[in-house]
Image 1 (cartoon, rainbow, N blue to C red):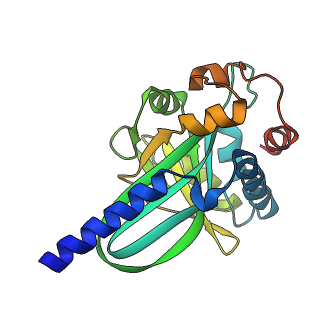
Image 2 (tube, rainbow, N blue to C red):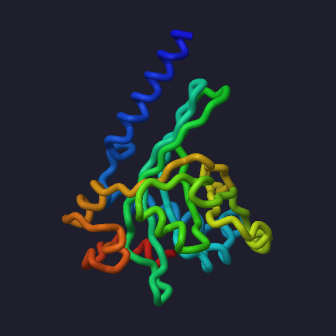
Length: 222
C-alpha cells in the first residue's frame, strides 16, 4: 500500500510539473506551426481522416499537438494547443491558447505523444470553456468521431453529441474517448503570444490586432 501511495504521489508531482511549462518547452509561435502541420495532415488524407463535412459545419476546432500520455498503473495526459471558433461571418477567429489535462486508472504502462483534435458542433461548449475549467463528458457530451468520407453520414447518428474527439498517431486519425479530461484557457501563453493580457472573448472578437504569417496560414487551411 505504501508503495502504491508513493507512486501516486510521484505521478501527481510529474503531471503538476508538466502543467507549469508548455510541452517540450515549445514557444507559442512554434505551437501554431505545429497546428498548421496537423491541419495539413487532415487535408492530405480525406479518405482516412476527419470527414470534411464535419469540419465544414464545425463551430469550433481545438488542436493540441504533441500531447504527452504517461501510464504506470495510474495514467494521465497533458498538452497545450489552440482553439479557434467561427465568427458571425463564418470566418475562423484568432487562436486562443488552451491546455488539456486528465488522468485514468487501470493497468497501463508506457509513454507516448499524439496529436488531439476536438471538433465542436455548437458554440455553447466553446463559450463554457471561456468561463473557466471545462470537463469533457461532464460539461458537454463528447464522443470518438467518425473517420473518412464514407463516415460523413455518421455525424448525425448521435445528435446529442456536442464534441467529436480525434487523435493522430503515425499519420492516421482515429476517434478517441476523452471523458474526464479537463480543458483550460492558457492565459500565460495568450499573454506571451499577443504581448498583452486579453480575455478569450476579446481574442475571438479581433482585439489581438495583426495576425502573424503562421496564424494566417492556419486560418486559410481551416
